[in-house]
Image (cartoon, rainbow, N blue to C red; front, side):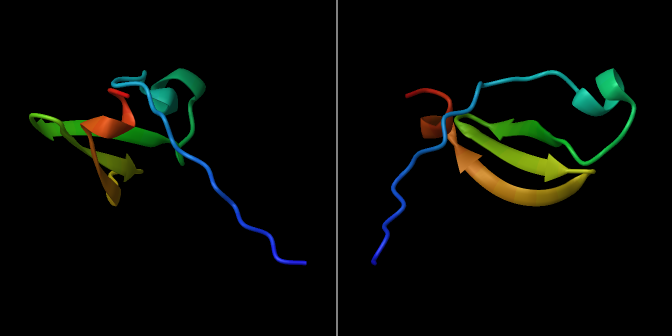
Length: 57
């Protein structure tokens, strides 16, 4: 049977430093670097670039 996955990602514009909160890494952090642009970082390494449509829906 053919399955099609259709979904979206809606993120908050900012969120807390979860590594600081829980004491271990692996969490994604947002680094805003321009109007409507942010980098998703995992342990300080680029994971993905995103735009405002992810948090300003």
